[in-house]
Image (tube, rainbow, N blue to C red; front, top):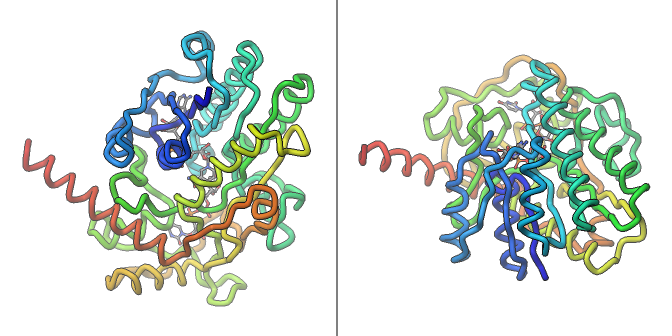
Length: 348
Ligand code: NAD
Ligand code: WQD
C-alpha cells in the first residue's frame, strides 16, 4: 500500500520527483495529457531506475476520465498534483485557458479524493503567490500581494480552494509547496527540462544561448536597486526540490502535520542575481556567454528569496546543491539533449 498518483508526471518537476519517490520505495503512476511534455521523460526514468512508469494520457479537466483512473487504482494513498499550465506570459494572453485548466483539474482531483477516500495531497504552489513581497526573505506567513498574472492567481486560488474543500472534509490533509525558481537537471543528464513551449526562464535561456540555439541572452534590466543592478532570485536545484516532495509525503503519511493544511517555502534561502547566475554558468562550464543588458521585463519583481526554516525544521529538508551545481547539471542536460537531436536527425 504505497501507490502515489503523480499528476504531470511527464513534466519537468514531476519526472524528477518520480525518481526520488521510486528511490524511496514508493510505487508511482502518472497522469499527464502531454500538453507540455512527451513521454520521453518516462524512458529516462526507466534508464535511471529500471522501472517503467504507467502514464494515463488523460486531461484532468475531464472528470469522468479522471474518475476512471481512481477506479482502476483503488490503492492510491497519496497524490502529488503538479499538472498545470505555468507560462506567466501565456496566462496574461489567455487567462481563461489558465483558469479553466489549472482550477478545473484541481477541483476534479479533490472530487476524486473525496469519492475514493484518498487522504493526502501535495499541491505545487509557487513563490508567485507572494506577488511583490514587502519583506525579505519571505516566510510562509508573509502576506500575499496582488497576483502579478492570471497564472499566479491560479496558484493563490488553488491554495484557497484546498483550504476550503479540506475544511469540509476532515479525512483529507494537504501540504502546499511554494517553489521559488527551480532549475538544473538530474545528474545523469538523462532527464531535464524539455517543454514543448519555448523556454523563457533564465537557466534554459542561458544554456540554449551557449549551445547556439538562440543568439544571445538578454538580461532584463541592470538598473534595479540591487547589489549589481540585476534582479535577485532564489534558484533551487531540481533534485533538492524533488526530494522535498518525498519528505512532504512521508510527513503527511506519518501524520506529523499539526494542521490539516501545511505550507512550505522551497528555495535555498539565498538570493542570486541574474548577473551572478550568468557568471556561475561561465565559471563552471568555461563557456563565454553571449549576453547583453536589455530593458526591464514588465511584471518582474526586483528581488525574492525564501526563508526555508520551516521546511528544515518540520520536513528535515536541507538543500544540497548551489547555483554552480545547478548550472553544471543544466549544461550537461542541454548538451545531452542537443546531441540526441543530432542523432535523431541523422537517423532520419
Ligand atoms: P511542466 O509543464 O513541465 O509540467 C506540468 C505537466 O502537467 C506537463 O507535462 C503538462 O502536460 C501536464 N498537464 C497540464 N495540464 C494538464 C491537464 N489538464 N491534465 C493532465 N496533464 C496536464 O511544469 P513543471 O515546471 O514541472 O511544473 C509543475 C508544477 O509546478 C506546476 O503546477 C507549476 O505551476 C508549478 N511550479 C513550477 C515552477 C517552475 O518554475 N517550473 C515554479 C513554481 C511552481
Ligand atoms: C528569473 C530572472 C528575469 C530570462 C518564474 C515565474 C514564477 C515561478 C518561477 C512558476 C528574472 C531574468 C529571465 C531572460 C533575464 N514559476 N531573466 N533574461 O520570472 O523569477 O519566475 O518562474 O510558478 O511564478 O514567474 O523566472 O527564470 O523567468 O526569471 O534577465 O531571458 O531572470 O528578469 O529576473 P521568474 P525567470
